[in-house]
Image 1 (cartoon, rainbow, N blue to C red):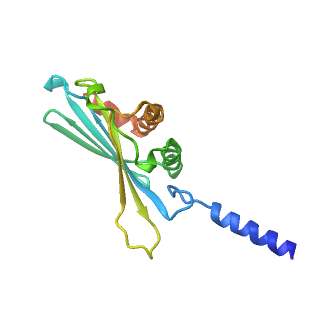
Image 2 (tube, helix red, strand yellow; image 1 turned 90 degrees about the vertical axis):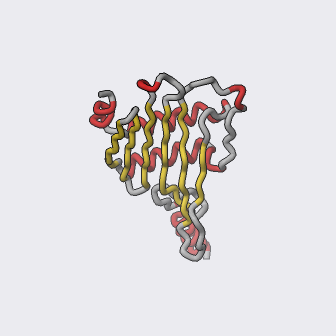
Image 3 (cartoon, rainbow, N blue to C red; image 1 turned 120 degrees about the vertical axis):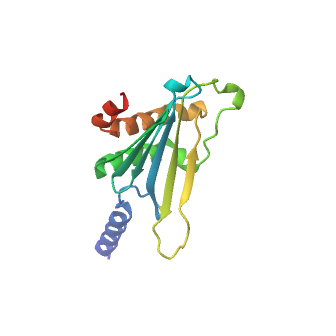
Length: 170
């Protein structure tokens, strides 16, 4: 009887610990889209630019740059491992609860550059007919989230292929 109990416990733990890439622990929710945004802020128009990186859970990515009248859109892909590493950073940062507040307007530097992300989370349980959950992390967040968000932002920027970054600089 003890052996059957131990085998059942091992099977249960093994089944529950298996985690697909992007799945959030203890739920049927899966991180399916990460949208990173950057804006240079209020500077002279010839130097203003913004870009967006969309990262899908299948590894497909889209990079869109807006610089003056020029627009550049490039597609690239990342490995499942890279998506899993990024997902882990996002999950461990504590931003998934959606309670990340922006700084009060008086504390936001005038004209400063801004970075923010939007997360799309789908429920994979077919019995629950729900729209995806959208979590928006604002620019200029509270100090307690700043370090982990900067690490997430740097990780995303490092996913952009060098060829795209070089074309950007022109």
